[in-house]
Image (cartoon, rainbow, N blue to C red):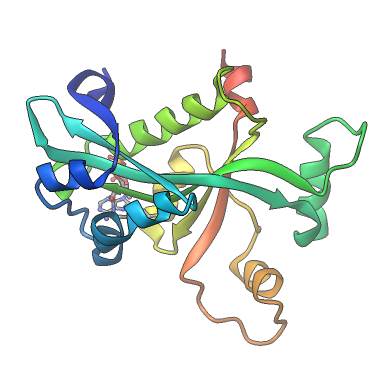
Length: 201
Ligand SMILES: CC(C)(COP(=O)(O)OP(=O)(O)OC[C@H]1O[C@@H](n2cnc3c(N)ncnc32)[C@H](O)[C@@H]1OP(=O)(O)O)[C@@H](O)C(=O)NCCC(=O)NCCS
């Protein structure tokens, strides 16, 4: 049973929705602030669209919110092994430098509803949404910039996401352009290959 599909309704997060809902809190102050204060401006400038699931029995409650935007994986910016792996995933008629994807830039589940599988349902929803034949563009990957916290990384791994860079040191070197002492990254890039859905069906 899917809580989000059966007990919630999907909306674009607009000023009107925000005005009629209780403040959303997922326990991460930066994310809460983004959904409340920045999300609609991102949408206005077409930089990211934010959606939410509202509880049917009390539509003033936002159960889950997420932001998506177009993105790509630049395979020549990856370590050689990972680049070769990416190349092996597709046809070679015309070599592409960028593989298309959708970025989940933000994802939060209301603390009231955390730990019930709702975040995983939200990821399944996005996967199905962008894999769907009604999607207007080719979209091979779901990409996330996951908070670099063991619980969050394990949440994405359990949902079939893999780190784009095999190690944090490589991600630091390739994305920051530095080869010296790595700092701890705030986020880790991870991806889910939507073609997996075809193999599962
Ligand atoms: C990460 C998040 C979306 C997961 O949503 P959820 O509905 O609780 O997730 P699920 O119930 O599907 O999965 C639970 C798993 O998430 C993991 N998790 C990640 N962050 C967690 C958190 N802050 N609290 C509890 N569990 C968390 C746990 O490992 C848990 O695994 P378990 O079931 O083996 O214990 C949600 O905890 C959240 O909104 N956190 C704050 C914002 C955030 O960190 N967002 C991710 C940004 S990339």
